Image 1 (cartoon, rainbow over the protein chains, first blue to last red):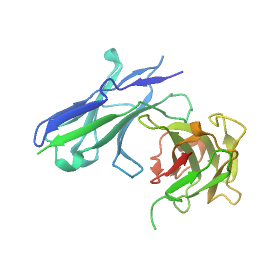
Image 2 (image 1 turned 135 degrees about the vertical axis):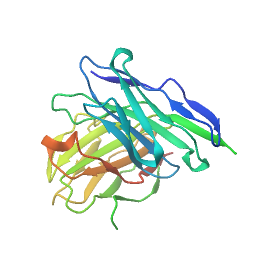
Image 3 (image 1 turned 30 degrees about the vertical axis):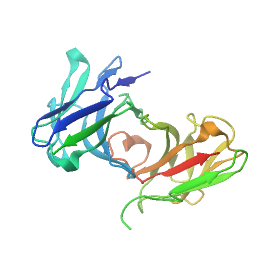
Length: 114
Length: 118
């Protein structure tokens, strides 16, 4: 079965600084990978997803993520963080080969200082 | 509205009470998922519907949990004889296509129902 690790529970950055949120997965083949954002009291919103092809994926709100097979990682990045980016971020994996059930990481809480 | 809606947004139940949580998916969406999100954790899959058919209920934690989607649109998650460990946010999500395309489709999440069992 697949699993997802988000090693950072909290990340604090200053507004305007760059951001990288880590995600590592465990799965025998190349999975399908997702990043979601959850603002307080809101449901999850998809930021970006990777299925195949170009390993650098562009998403909404200026986010991007890079799939690195050798490191089993799918880290989320943003070059300049805005205060409105403060939220909970979840990495998720779906096993390839016809599955449809995502396994989510426990999330990383992003705090943005002015 | 255009998005997924859930009601109630907050529910407080005494241990042993039955509760019913409602999900209104986006109109026309074939797939509907229920997730349970414990405090400080990511969502965990509970069950999946393709139209009115419940194709997967492998994530339901016990036989106290029951879900239905009788007309292929609105879904209800029912929890009988609630226990304190049932306290969580229950998320509903819908996506456009059925099973064959579900992994590729964007899931649209509702705001969730926060259940607190005293």
